[in-house]
Image (tube, rainbow, N blue to C red):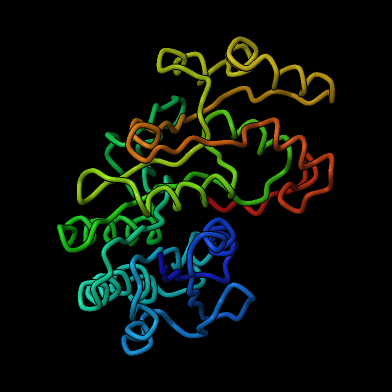
Length: 296
């Protein structure tokens, strides 16, 4: 396949390029130059976009303004890039005969569905309740895609959970309920390029959880006990390092459809976070170091 990839210089774009380039011809477009980017420019440039899409079978759209831009970039720019840019991309895809569009979205748009003092079980049936301009614009983009999907353009929306570098103790625990390895996210995008089914599909992409819905009440007030029961391997690794287990967990992301419909399953759980820490991977920060606080 010939695949156009927006946001190809970003962290996720690079991972997706790496997952696809062995078997497909990938053309990357990004405003910042990088070895995975072939066209340097803004994907909202209609003429440039038509050039990139010419002859493409599919497009993976992961270019966007994100949570770290909130408060530093005007809301109008969020709408221009995340909403109108997505609309432009769909129109250009239909005009140039692109048959499949895979859109990177975020579990962060569930926002206010996560309630203080409780643990919320979140799957694709959970109604998003966005909090920030980032969340609102990603949700608007999803709705545009849903409205415009059809026989001429199959659309797959992937709501990915946290996958950026974090302190090892945080990342390992998050792999139980709200985190995912960036390579797994890239694999999900690859799977979404070829699967069958409905014209429009939406899937959560998060590491497989060991928790069960009936654990939520206890997870909110005594998460450590539930972790010892459901994930004794992680509890043992924390004990070996004299790390404290989380005392409360406020959400569990789980996908009802990615396995059955996409044929995708995460490969890298909490064990990989420990392995990356031991080999000095830049993907994992030192334990208990300060994170930047961005949301997934």
